[in-house]
Amino acid sequence: MLKLGLGIVMGALVAGGACAAVSEGRPAWGRHAAELCVASGPAEPSCGPAQVELRRDGSARVRIDDLVYRLRLHSSQVEVVLMHGAVQVDEFTVPYVWLGSSLQFNDDERKVRYEVRFRKRAANEQSR
Image (cartoon, rainbow, N blue to C red):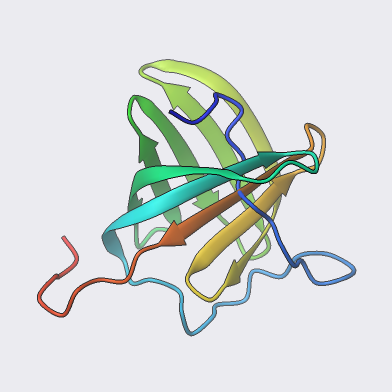
């Protein structure tokens, strides 16, 4: 299981700040199989399976076992609330970027990088 301080690989943020521009690879609204990758400091990311629900209202839910990242995507920042059942574990707001079909953001205060990598759907799969 991923460590509680899950991070997503930020990768290449544009110099001068992140831009949340919509990319061609951004997934459609609905439920998706994904992979959540988290890295602390210079360490390589630790990745594991996740279920993601992208909502039309600009929010997303990233579920890993009994942990849920509640994301509220604004034009250039994401509000992140980490829940363990009914208990709020963490909350922060940071810049984010879509790179292809990956959502990436950093928690610079804790030196943690996050990446949600969406898996491509098979031709016979539909969003739910």
